[in-house]
Each structure stands twice: as C-alpha cells, then as structure tokens.
Image (cartoon, rainbow, N blue to C red; front, side, top):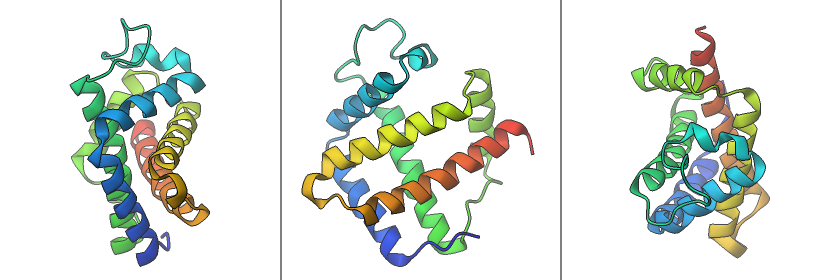
Length: 154
C-alpha cells in the first residue's frame, strides 16, 4: 500500500489539466524528449516509424501521449482512494501484452518517466516544484509497476 496524500492527488490533477489544455504542443514535446533519450524506440510507435522528426498535429501521437499522462493521473487518483492501483482492470492485461510484443524493457520505463517529468516541468514553468515532481513520480512508478507485473504474467 502506498500512502498518497490528498495534496499529491491535487497537484497531479491540476498539472494534468494544464498539460491537457495544450496536448498538441505537449505531446510533441514529450515524444521529442523520449527520442532524445532513446532513439531506438522510434520504431515501436507506428506514428513515428517513417518520420525524421516528431510530427506536428498528429492525432495518433497526441492520443498516445495524452493516454500516458491520463493513466498516470488516474493512478494518482487510485493511489489516494485505495493505496494501490487496480490491476484487475482488463486495460492492464492489454497493456502488458502490447508492451511485451513491442519489446519494452525496464530502461524504457525510465525514459518515459524522465520525458513525462520533463514535459510537465516545461508546461508548468515556475509552478514546477519538487513536491509536484514527487507526486507524479510516485503515481508513474506505481503505474509502471502494474504494467510490468502484467508483462511478467504474475
């Protein structure tokens, strides 16, 4: 069980709303950060395969990035409510199998986390804080652990 405070949940929720307001810009920024850290993952995403750089105004890219931010936000909500993430949801089984099929390894979760945090920091500017970073980190780490659990089939 993870102790996730009301304040942490509020920080994640409010910053998620900032990201969502300009998801087009933030999704490009997010994938730019991902590819800076791990260019080899480019071929894991259909919307990046044939591109020299991260495409602008790509609805698939935006939807995928928004899903990462949204699932992390949802993790924060579950952590506050239950102290854990509900992995019985069919979504996690699906995510586990997709991640295995695409060849996702532990290092990729670190890259995603770093890109996620860097994007939020960029979006929030002077509203960024260590407390906010920690709240997103805890929520993401628990989400990643849930996906990894499904990847391993345990």
